[in-house]
Amino acid sequence: MRPLLPTRRLALLALSACALAHTTLHAQSTDYPNKPVRFINAWAPGGPADVLARSLGDALQTQLKQPFITENKPGAAGNIGADMVAKSPADGYTVMFGIDTTFTINPHIYPTMPFKPGDLKPLMVLASSGMMVVAHPSTGFKSLSDMVAAGKAKGVNFSSAGSGSPGHLAAEILGDATGMKIQHIPYKGNTPASTAVLAGEVDGGILAAPTMLQHIKVGKITALAVTSRQRSKVAPDVPTVIEAGYPQLVQEILYMAMVPAATPEPVMQILQRGMLDALRRPDIQARLTTLDLQVDGAVGAAASKRLADLSAQYGRIAKATNMKVD
Image (cartoon, rainbow, N blue to C red; front, side):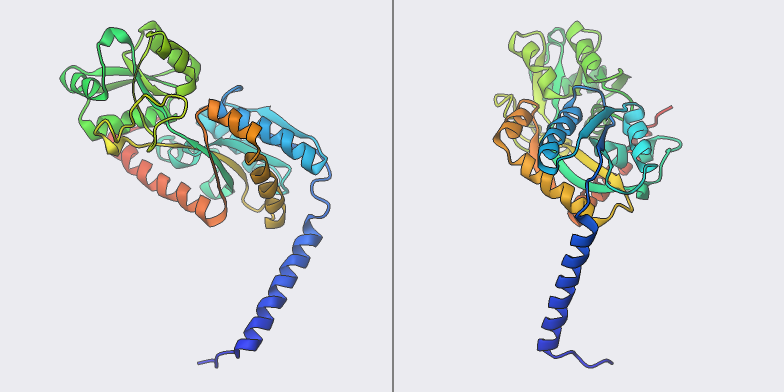
């Protein structure tokens, strides 16, 4: 057994390690960025991930004196954009913006994935958001319990932003937890899924709150609950699923920035510091509040653990419900 090092020597070693780390960080990061940085939004233009990418890109461009350019590469529930970034050089010049389900549910429901789980790693959990359970007024549902009762008796159909989307997953969780019979009808994005509820093409859905609000206010859509742990700031009168008596339905979307797995830590730290500074700005926080987003900021092992925990949870749901993408 090796003898323990004296306390003084341990302290000196620790100081030396810190100094070396600082020197290495400085050497590796002083010239980053020295050319334009691409932010790849893996979801539709105009959505929360797109707004986050453009807002943070504008802030970082001012801070770091290089262009930060957002490109939209939607499709396959985020897989197309994620694959593009996974195959890019791991140098900090290509960053994916998207949501956790690309990494937490897609590997369980797609027959093949274009990239491996370890090809990308979290740069930061930027923000989180719940969803809203809504119904067309013709259903007569006034509460989540009304919807559950109808779903058990005769079944209901739900729209979603697409197979593998958070709304699809939430519908499967709802059906699995309550015994409801739910027919899932995928649309190409949150806007057409919301329009389907508005038009009465479907009974309801579990969708992003901001697209619902104007229709809820005039009685064209009925809000039943939100899936977050706390009430939404944009719809404070709508109860949470916990308050409605269904705590097992809590589900929050994590909005992520991801980079190729071999991206150097010093480069990541420059981006992380810039993003955190931007997320603290009152104008950006106000913009995110209108989208029903709560600023997060988790990085490193904490961010990775949250993705791993969600992947395990959603994998069990996918298996139990035979959730698949054809």
